[in-house]
Length: 181
Image 1 (spheres, rainbow, N blue to C red):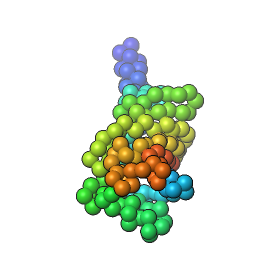
Image 2: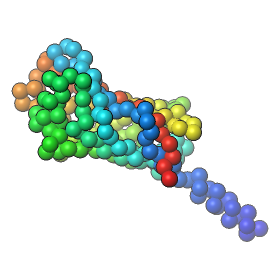
Image 3: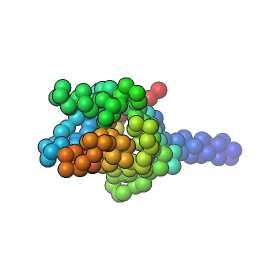
Image 4: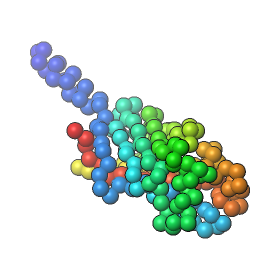
């Protein structure tokens, strides 16, 4: 009688832990801003997400994403130098941004919200990420957040006029994941 109780406890404990995942090829982290009414899209070529997620047990889930700001690109050299420069991302002085989420809410179906915080340019602000979770051998996390750039002092000063550059920046991600060992 003791063995079945032990096995039941072991199985219950095994199900209580979220799985750890690493990003695979095809994962993206992008952004879109508006400059003088024109959409400017870009991406971060280098970012490292550490994902722990279990849709059945959100309390054990965690996102920790490190973003190499010097890897930001719009594909336009005129914009990219300014984007990575001191007025915007300041990638020389503060080369990394970090997104950490430890609280999650289910929205129904395979939709969730990560109630995370982004640290950028030394400023930490709430940054909820709404995402879908597609389970499978290689789960896919696809999400979107809208950030206020001026809350992070991005483009402050001469670039702070929302008629020139909108305050809202849309951030999108699509992570193709595999269990980490």
